[in-house]
Image 1 (spheres, rainbow, N blue to C red):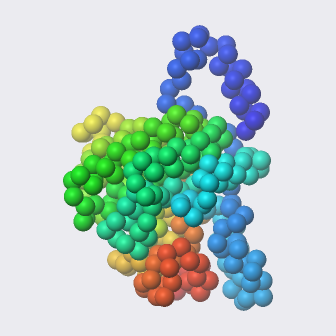
Image 2: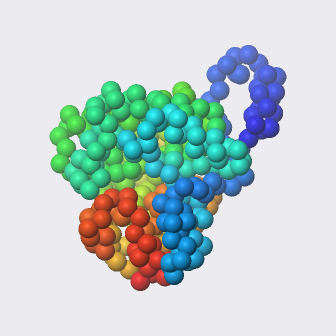
Image 3: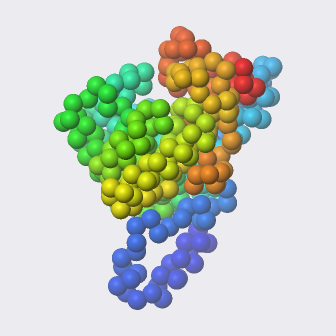
Length: 321
């Protein structure tokens, strides 16, 4: 990355002053500034494999899950957020790899769903947190998925709460544009089973997706890649017709190899999907949720908490049973 940045700086110095002083938004492409995706060396799957080398499931989990580039989620558990995102993106940068990060700390997070409730203590606390999140990344290349479920989780909220949430997301996107110029941010848009394309396009627009690089779909869900691609096309048709623009999108394929059985919380019989890659019908197919991490105290994860790594679930997900 450093070599590329030096070359970019030299090229910019030869431009007319007015043009160099006002680069267009999202001009940088972090996928061309790096050589492949970063596999989190401290993921929950990696930690479990390291702690259980004699377990008969360890080899399969290591080969099929732990070494696949997967996003790291950041929230209140991350400590100093600027230090956390700075350390993670620095580690990836040192290996010339592109890191995947999830910002998951919005005020009133999972307000209606409940399994992952929490987040920042107030809108102002969130604004400060997200500014530090972006500032920690700084000029290093990165991909960020911004606040999974935040635009789908409206069912029990009043209009004032919805307006407040959308304002927080708009502010967050402005901070990334200001502080993390080589980061592509995808504002999360839920999944095809949650809201109509018309509704989601309106929510995306009102939350400021015009400022984002794109939107994300299927995070922590199980719907097929084809279903998500079709939904994204419908969302973009609505964005184009109503607001005059479209956006790229990414799909979480970590657990959609068997598609969905209609359940969203630790359903049985699911399977890992296409590993993290560029293209595949979307701008990227990404493992955003770690396969084997619980969705909460439900389904085959009964008795677990959201985010807890369940090796038996992970093992079964490799084979689809």
